[in-house]
Image (cartoon, rainbow, N blue to C red; front, side):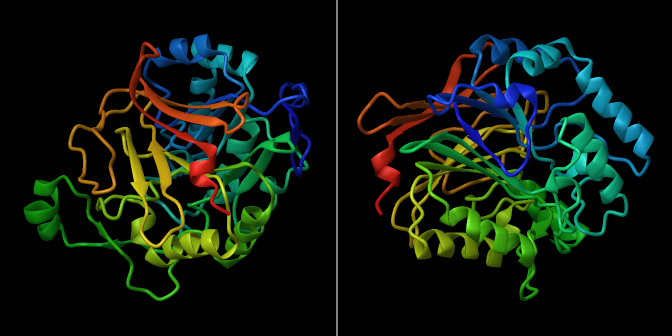
Length: 347
């Protein structure tokens, strides 16, 4: 697998074959460093080409940077994580708990220190732009070459995120909670954003780059309209802008993976788009949430058991087949969506 990046990657990453794109990408989120993580056994048996940590990779939740660093080390000491790191290339984005505080955004006072601790743990090179960008740790990677390429786009939904719009405690307790919904509503502030303008300019340029598959790695759910919890739906201008850019630049092959929720599901969104967007939410590696929120874009059922995601691509077919599967602690498929690359490539 040929890898093209803006920075020098670790020895494991650059050792890939240049002959083929990844055929199997696994991913997951929401793993607590103080719990056993037996699902790593199933993940490691798969021997994937790449593993993506989607966020909440630890539960830091602190203003003490020594505590945060120690929690990363607890994850690093897990035998299953050690095996994964030894045999599989890993890339990672953060969400709120590894960023530093539950539901935190741009106001978090220790984000610069947290950034360096996070990137040290994931062995980001010292000269990586992720270490010094003034507006976050967003990045992208391109794997493969020619007609067999996968571009992984990883926005940072924390560093620049504006204030959330929360309902009163009374409304949450008497209405939202009864419907398995969280305390947040879409922002009414014009221009409110999770990404910030500089990151939006970067993202637009990334979307315009050639690739057969554009894998958007979102630490929060993107397609569900409203859950009341953190999601792109709380910043409708951001969500609309992404959909508009996909149409404007005729971006083929977009697939979305997300985490955060403590449940797993597949969503599909078609409104005012030229092809359906598919999102697989994989959460969590250890964490569970039984009060699953409604989602009118959900395909099939959901799971609140521990899970990880599997994106597999059959490049041997003239029209490559794409399989998205959510898998349980034993590596068995809980749900799946299969489609041809041509079905998400109308341009």
